[in-house]
Every structure is written in C-alpha cells, then in structure tokens.
Length: 270
Ligand SMILES: NC(=O)c1ccc[n+]([C@@H]2O[C@H](COP(=O)([O-])OP(=O)(O)OC[C@H]3O[C@@H](n4cnc5c(N)ncnc54)[C@H](O)[C@@H]3O)[C@@H](O)[C@H]2O)c1
Image (tube, rainbow, N blue to C red):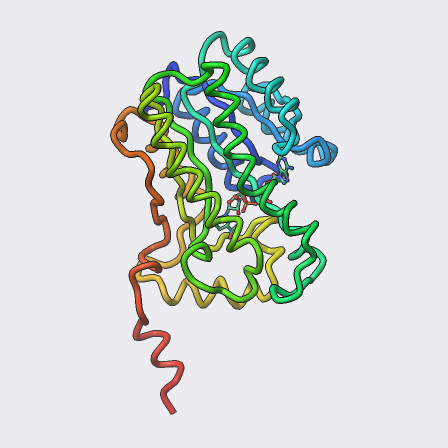
C-alpha cells in the first residue's frame, strides 16, 4: 500500500517506547513510505531496549535524549543532520508524562514540582525542539513538525488530570511557534488530537478501559487506531499538506463534533 510519499525526506521521531506506541507505528510507516530518520527517546526508556528492534527494522539509528534537556536536544539535532546528511524535513513529538497521574494525585491537590515536570516534559519540550532547530537552522523549508495531543485540552475529562493543562500549553506552543517559524522559514507546526489509544501512556490514565469504550460509542466512526494516526501523520509530513499549519487537527472518528450518539442514549432507556 506504500506509495513512497516520503521518499528523500529526513526526520526525527520522538517517543517510540514499544510496539503499542503511536510513534512506533509512525516510524514503521515512514520507513515504508521511503523516509530516513533518527529515533530518539529518554535515556531511561532506552534501557527497555525495544527501540533497538524498531531501529533494525527501519534501518535507522537511535540517539538518546531527554526532551527536557537543552544539551541533549542540541546534540540530537546536530547528530541527526550529520547521520541523515542534511536538514530535517519532519519531526514527530510523541511525548507525554505526568508524575501527578503516575502517583495518583488528584487535580485539586497537585504536587507542584510534579506539575512543572508534567508541563516541562509534555509541552515545553516542543518549544525547546523548535527553538533549538530554529537556532541551528535545522529544518528545511516546508518542513513539518507534529505533536500529539488530546481533546482534554478543550474539555474536562476528570481523570486526565494535569495532562489537560499540559496539552493546552502544547497546542498553544504549536500555534505560536507555527506563526514565527512559518514567517521565518516556511516551516509548519501542527498538533493532531488523537482518540484514546491503548498504549503505555494511555493505559496510565485511571479508568482507561471504560473510557476507551465510552469514546468509541461516542464517535460515529469509532475510535481512531494508532495505525490510522500514523497514516494521518505521514500525510502531514508529506508535500500534499504544505499549507496546513498552526492547526489542532482532530483525528478522533468524529468524537469532537458529537453531542451524543443513539448508542449512548439507549444506555439510559429504562
Ligand atoms: N494513548 C492515548 O490515548 C493518547 C491519546 C491522545 C494523545 N496521545 C499522545 O500521544 C503521544 C504518544 O503517547 P503514546 O500513547 O504513544 O504512549 P507511549 O507511552 O508509547 O509514548 C510516550 C513517550 O513519551 C516518552 N517520554 C516520556 N518522558 C520523556 C522525556 N523526558 N524525554 C523524551 N521522551 C519522553 C516515553 O518514553 C514514551 O516513549 C503523547 O503525547 C500522548 O499524550 C495519546
């Protein structure tokens, strides 16, 4: 089914932890579509070692980088250009983590040190990637940077906790930086707002299994899968979407425009 739509493109893919990761699916498809890229993840995630299987499969190199560290990101961007032999055409930011969620802190009683870590890892890291890329003039004209987000940025889903705040910030950074990078170098920046997806990050949210079923029944097309998300990402990295920038793009089977579905109403029939 691949059509080589990323042939000749060079990329950096953040966040492939294991086979379930959305970034993993993106890497597999980007490879099938002819791209060359560097894989990266936090040093601690590397220790699990699964990313090496993906690297082998996609003929790519792996560079460890903590997305909150300027030094790591500078090294990553420099080395990626060296390995790939030129400027970068696409970047996937597929990073999310909340210590408050992990430690079961309620939103009304957040630990503020954890809170700033949530924002730093899940949102400010996008700003750093873009700022360092701009400083190094590392992204080609018409290059495409994508970050993954969730509708919890616009609407309250109580167990999404402080990740909602992190995603709001992430989407705002994408819009603001998209403006500046567009003017400076025709680089586009967007977020894709994905359906709940069974991955390590997703399953970390309390009540995830019930929630994923609810979301499925509230979406006319059903929940979008990680594979379908990868397809959308590839189209956003391709030249077919060159004038799309500063957008939050819903990839959710229609969930974001649905008030209620008959399926859900029927559950309340007595
Ligand atoms: N799974 C869902 O339901 C869902 C829905 C919408 C959006 N998203 C978003 O999609 C993205 C990818 O998540 P996923 O569902 O594939 O889960 P995942 O757990 O496979 O990926 C999250 C990644 O973030 C990485 N990460 C954490 N801290 C980091 C750091 N300091 N530096 C670098 N990397 C770090 C992890 O190692 C991991 O690879 C996240 O932004 C997530 O919020 C997920």
